[in-house]
Image 1: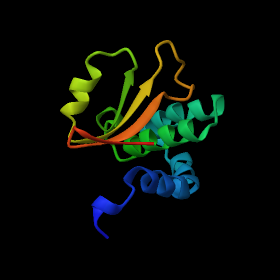
Image 2: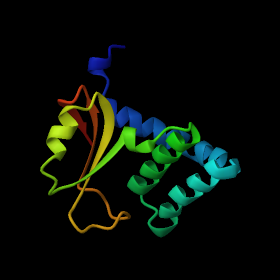
Image 3: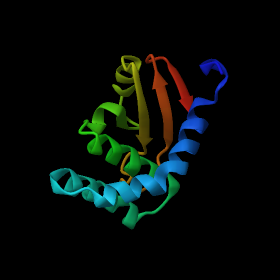
Length: 124
């Protein structure tokens, strides 16, 4: 199937939701410094267990599990950030999250999407 006809964001999130329970089991078993980092990331779910929070925590935890910086994949911006569009335009591939100004990290984001080649965005 050609990538141009696949609904990228919905497919990605559907597969993430499908694998989430197993990933969470794997993360719980992980020990050491990586395990402590993952546990810290997963604390957000206990404060606000929504699908958006769960997805964000699992993506960040997966990056940590793979010893990668989740900040390179998941980019978070405030809706008042004037530089956000410029930075997103330079992004080759990633996930962006836009929060309302003053929102808590547990609150639902204003926008979530996938960046491909900077300019093309697929929103939820």
